[in-house]
Image (cartoon, rainbow, N blue to C red; front, side, top):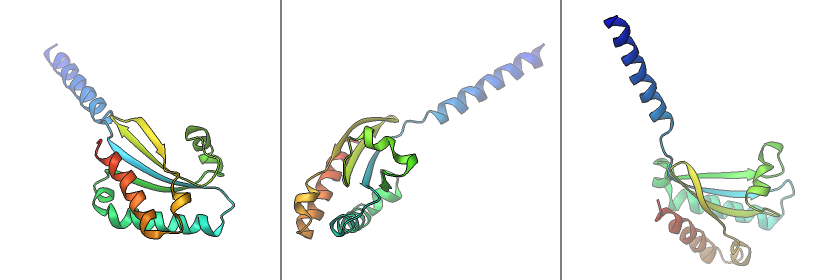
Length: 137
């Protein structure tokens, strides 16, 4: 009987430990550059500038998983949900804050369209928008 009770206690502790680890809260800034199948010169240029800015300016945050960065084709079947999730209708930079495993807010950084001809201003804008979300982690 003692062995049975001890086994049940150990099993219960193991289950509790496994469930608490699997529910570990994720706190992260997700940065997405969304595009469709059709890609104009400006769209690919903006993507390249965003990729460079994120990789150079936030290298430590990428390594430490404070930032997750993805380039996503929203026309692909698996990604169609993003169109509704983020009200997408064209190429867009979206910055999302996830706290305790749940998205708490997001923003379409749509000034990229106005700033795409000035690389310095464009990069500063992207850095500023991402940094603002990082401060909330």
